[in-house]
Length: 169
Image (cartoon, rainbow, N blue to C red; front, side, top):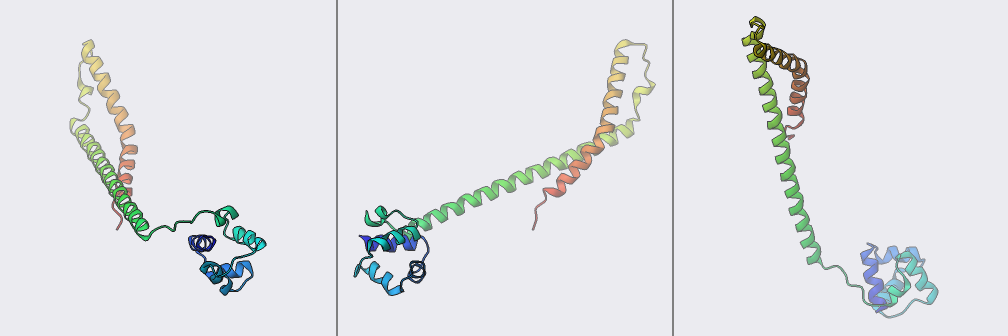
């Protein structure tokens, strides 16, 4: 039992027999004999082994340590690969959606600017003696004023967004 535990824990820590032997100041053949069950370490050496392997002595003396099976590791790595692919697809779809949003914002701003240029502020020639027409004219003017002030900033941000969300090859 001790021999199997030393071997399993050594392998799980990624150590060779030679590396463990160097850390314990013994020869590799000593490690080999312990793992084959041909000899056992004394109590002081058992404490040193537990310190080097960062494992309690009770674990070394206790139950058999099960080595992770290759099939289990392969299944886990396959599942992780599938998850990574799903996350990559989700990120690509999100990036593409954002890019289209920025394109639509850019097109919308350009179209509204063109419409405002063509209309040439029609509210300027309105007769403001009618109160309802006066409210409409002021509202139209306020919207135009706000759009003209904010649209360039939004347009620059949208164009930057288009370039930042493009697919990098």
